[in-house]
Image (cartoon, rainbow, N blue to C red; front, side, top):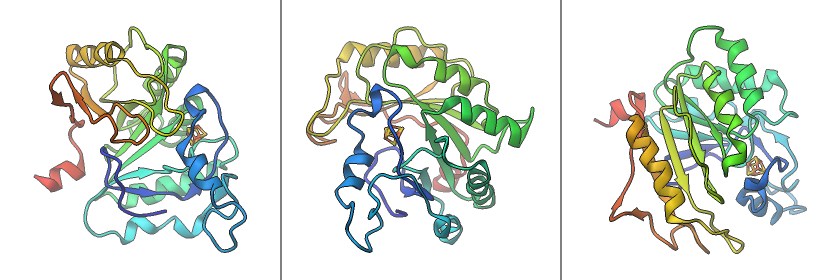
Length: 248
Ligand code: SF4
């Protein structure tokens, strides 16, 4: 998959890996699994193997052919740091991102310690390039160790995706974090999200000077509940980025 997307906080998706396995409660209603499994067994379809982890080396260079700067969500249909993705393959993904430095890339994982170790091996004590944003996904207060792993990772930009938010997260240590996205779950089994959980996160971001993006309340469809919070949309992005510089 390498196309324009309706995800509010990005422009395009790039999936050099597809497929994954569940790791925590945030995965219970995984959209990528639901979508991929629809096509299992359909001969010739890109998701013929359903949600089985599949490397797609033929897609590795796709972003190099996109001339205009884009915000690119990497592996919207997988997790680049799944333990079955060889480190060499993840390195090739990073090689492309480093070369295609007119884009901004968003790499999001729940395998936070593998991300940390990978970035330490690649960048040492320096920080990675600022057009490669690395983030961890958390869904409740039990997964906050992922934030500590991210803080210890030498990413150029660090972000949190708190989506689906399914329980309060409580106090967050936002030191070293540049951006926080929050969203409710969507789909037929969407779980509850409460306004006080979202406000608690927004207020901590505001107090700490961290960019805050509220993606959606969720519901049956992503746009079912809109995305207003306390009378306005929250659509902040971290700076600086190549993408934003090009748009100005
Ligand atoms: S880590 Fe992401 S892609 Fe993998 S099963 Fe969980 S929600 Fe789905």
